[in-house]
Length: 378
Image (cartoon, rainbow, N blue to C red):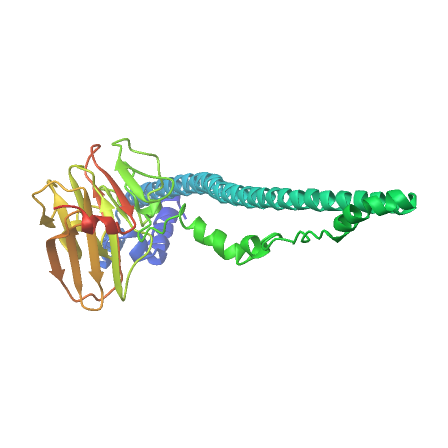
């Protein structure tokens, strides 16, 4: 069998065994090739055709390789970011606990100082009492000694001094008494000590109803170390493009979602512009341009791309009132208690607070309810 005949047989075998789905566009294309071979067409044409097919498959494979290498790069970047996050978070944990430790040390020192002061006061009081009783003892000792010497004197002297001596021995001074409250007031220091310190600690700590989740923040946003405020830097940070993160809208979500009950919190806007504040559903898109199209209930100020209720006046603090069960989201001016807008909706899933910082002039801070706002003059 000649070389050409061998190629023909091999070509027929290849066509008969290759996967239609993986090489040929259709079964018709495969039948066409088989017919061409049966008609005596040069099998080298089939070789060239298969090379083209293999090159195309190889190109696709290389593209997949490049894509997977890109994914690997993202994974490696994520690992570095996780390490950086852990180190930064550990530093913050230590700083926060150091503040608490310092507070406890200060409280311990202040309590012990107060104890020492009371100790000195009580000791000084008893020292004065001791001095008084010592004077009494000294006076009595002198009287006894003088009386005993008088009794040893001659009859004439004794009889002469007897009235005075008798008067001296009959003089009676009241005994000094231990004053009331002379002892250390121990309950003042040890009574409910941990509870009293805890109550004092509440003056230096705050419970902010909304804590921001930096893993959702657009790379242009900078979330504060205490996770209560956010500002727009317009300086795109090198952060992992994790599924939770916004990549188009300059938004960040709260770390905790709500699926029942009533919730209230304030946000300090402090004349920032432009901004948006509201709640959104957990499943709402965070990638691309569709975030504000649906499942967003918000108020906004001078926001060019927003879809929320527009606020005309300049505000300092905005109050949220979310009643999940009744399906209402209300916004008001927290300073004047003026109602801004209320959305009525039937919630079907968890909702999260969101802050929208449009540009570098925007800075927003979540805060505890400021009760004094209600009493501020309108």
